[in-house]
Amino acid sequence: MTADRTADRAWRVEAIRRIEADYTRSADTHLIRLDLPHHPGITLYLKDESSHPTGSLKHRLARSLFLYALCNAWIGRDTCVIEASSGSTAVSEAYFARMLGLRFIAVVPASTAAPKLDAIRFYGGEIHAVDDPRTVYDIAHRLAAETGGHYLDQFTYAERATDWRGNNNIAESIFAQMAAEETPVPTWVVCGAGTGGTSATIGRYIAYQRHATQLCVADPVHSIFHRHFADRTAVALPEGCASRIEGIGRPRVEASFIPSVIDRMIAVEDAASIGAMRALSRRLGRRVGGSTGTNLVAVMRLAEEMASAQQSGAIVTILCDGGERYGCTYYDDDWLSARSVSWQEHEQDVQAFLI
Image (cartoon, rainbow, N blue to C red):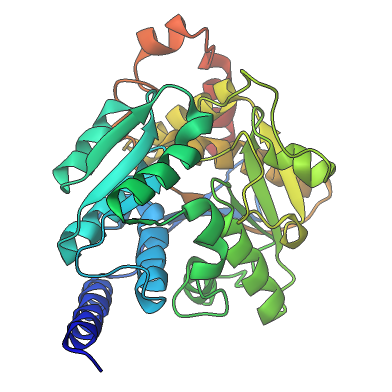
């Protein structure tokens, strides 16, 4: 073995050790129980992913993507790491890149909330903003070629980088935490889809463990995923059609989106997501992000259907991130008004559901 190859291997071993040590120092995320007074017998649980070191569900994905790339020897001592991301994934990846002493470039839509960009920069990441979100993939590939770097490509590798059989993935964590509850096997798990990695992991884990739980994916109405779920020939949105909810929904079907593991999809209007987000923030006494609101709208529909059918049980959904990064967007009434987002009635409906 040459000296360079020996040094590369030693660096990779140390890089993996650092990431694993960081994981070992972290506690699991909380599972918050909320009783639903208007639906006795149905309990809501929120898997609070905002408590990760980088503040979102994407921390799990970033860790998995880095470990996957390291174990494939795609990342080395001097590799520039690149990602196409609307914000949260890039924040988490910048965290791990800094941990390993690597340069990181995030290719982001120009509309990404400024606090997310600030968080990427806080961890030493660089921003490459693009006006057309559909170009992020090609530009990420181009930057990887120009720098001799590695494009992590969350949209391709999310579903395969995570060990869906276990190893403390989010599904294993949910079911372990539910074990002591009155209903240890929930009727539904509800999540969103950005890459599709989370829904693929949860759906596969449910099947592998032979649980009766069903998986529902809540999707922005201006996303291709729910359309593809209903009609596999639908693979891209018309030009100019885009969701305002950061982190979930896509204009094209991504390689990591696996519709066959999903039992149901519910399309959610952006205004409903914003209203639900605000209602849940009031209920919890702290702000949550827009994709959590999307999940909650789907939860409300499922709970009402269960109540109508006189079913009892539990619904688990994901609190994807905190709302601090959306103070200048989703929590700014003027910003919403300028974009004709009428969220107030939706907030009232969800507030009535929660209280």
